Length: 364
Image (cartoon, rainbow, N blue to C red; front, side, top):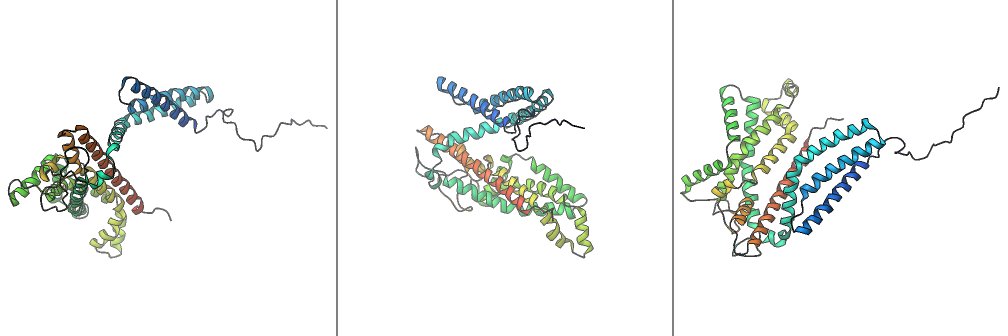
């Protein structure tokens, strides 16, 4: 009996044709997105050049995402079918909502970077504003003051906040613990200017009226940092499983040693992240430092002697008190704002790095 076999050409080893398989390649959404953003970037650049207005980064990103969503859905319907195109439509709408939420941040970063780069030079980081009334000068006195006051505030608030959270989680029971929790909640909602007034009143009572010191500014920042450190550390300590505590107790370990060797190492990643975020939260405060630490154009390394400048106050005074050359003051203000953003970004990246390094290893 003779059998005729249906011989078909072998496709083994041939590259897969993604278009004949009914699937778009993985890079297609990114190419469509980049092409859409580039299209609207060219349009807004032409509009800005024609009427002399500023380039709109928000409009470019928003309309670019809208156009890419429409094009991607149409192409997906033609190649992949209606079901997959609807899935891509819903996914694109979720991403578009996320982008809309980020548009204020995108606009802020673009504006600060574009306006701050002209004075982001070596002179800005090596000179102060002493005897400077026009162009030139820098913000080294403000950068040093910010680092000194924020670092001192961290040295004050971190031990107090961490020990308070340990007491609330491990020891606190009854009316005292409830009272501490209540006052921590109240401190969380205190306006920053009230903290500055408190620090100014304390040092005025000790040293006389009108005294403004860098140490007073550090105290004001510490008042704002303590409740954040307490709350973040408390939540991290509560996440430690009770089984670890019970296992330590079963081995005869004292409670203080159990906290030191078991609880804190387990939660150190989250505690470090919370501390870094609290520092990033207070480093940009203006009102309490303007009241407690004052304003100066001189470089001051002593927290206990004389007024001390900070970057937020430097930006505020450069913008509000423009001299004969207004543009020079505005350029310094934008450069100071860019420096402050970079410091906060470095702190957040450092917090993520520390959290990743000290996170408990779950695998073998």
